[in-house]
Image 1 (cartoon, rainbow, N blue to C red):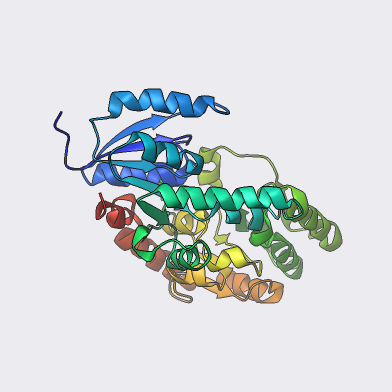
Image 2 (cartoon, one colour):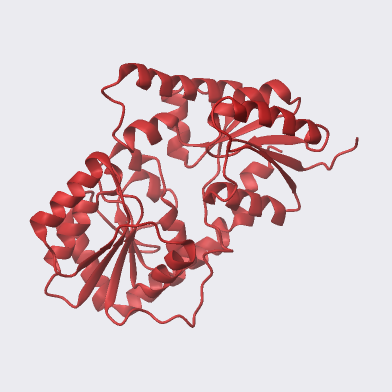
Length: 353
C-alpha cells in the first residue's frame, strides 16, 4: 500500500490530551502531516498485547512511528513490531521525573536502578529521541550516554486551542500574582510564600493554584504556617483547563519556578509558554533552561533562585509600572508567534520524518 510521504503513527501507553502530545500533534497536522494514533491505557501486560494487536491495522499506513510523551516503556515493543523509524519523545529522563522532581525512591536502590534501566532501554531502542531543551540534550549525552546524532531538541509549547487570548476578559479588581502548577521541590513555592509576606502591606493579592505531596508539600505547608501571609489564597484542588485559562487571563503576573534545583537547569515549565500566549508578564528564577528561550528584561523578569526579597522587588516593580508590564507582554507574545506556535515548534521534528 502506498502511504503519504509524511504520515506518522502516535504509539504507546500515552494520553494524547497531554499537552506535549497534543501540541506536537496539532503542529504536525498544521504542517500537512497526517497523524494516526495507536494507544492503550490498559494496565500491566495487557497494554503491550493491545498495542500489538491495534498496530496491525496501521502497519502500512505510516512512514514514522512516534512513541509519545509518557510511553517510554513501550519503546522496545514499537521497535520490535515496526519496520519504520521509531522516534521517542522523552522530554526529559525518567530519573528526573521520578527521582529529582518527586524527591522519591532515593532510599530504595533497586527502584532507583529500575528507573535508570528504563531510561537506558527507551533511548537504546529508539532511532531518534526528542528532548525539551539544549541543556537536556547535553544531559542525555553526558549522563545517559546517548549519541548526539540521535537527539533532537523540540520545545514543548502550548495548546493554543485551549489557551486562547480573549481581550474582552477583565482582570481581577485587585492586582493578582498567579502561581500555578504542582507543588514539587523544584517549584520553590516557599519562596513565593515569603515574597507574599514581604508585600503584605501592598495592594497585591497572591493566588496559588496547586497541590502536592511528600516533602515538597510538607515544606509548603510549613512555610504557610510560619509566614501566615494575609494576602495569599490557595486553591489546592485540580481545576479544569477552562478554569485555569480564566484564572490566567484575569491575573496580572504569572510566576515560574524558584528553587535552587538541578532540574531547573534543563527544563522550561508549561506555564512559561502559557504566559507568552496569554500576554501575561512572567517572573521566574534565572536558570539555564528558561534562559534558552527567554531574555531577562525583554520577555520576562528574572530573580536569583530562592531569593524572596528579589522576587518581591520584581513583583512590586511590575505592580508600579504598567508600561513595563505591557512591554514584556508584547515582546513575549511576539516571540511566541515567531518561534513557539504548534506549527513552528515541530519544525525540528519535521526534519527527521
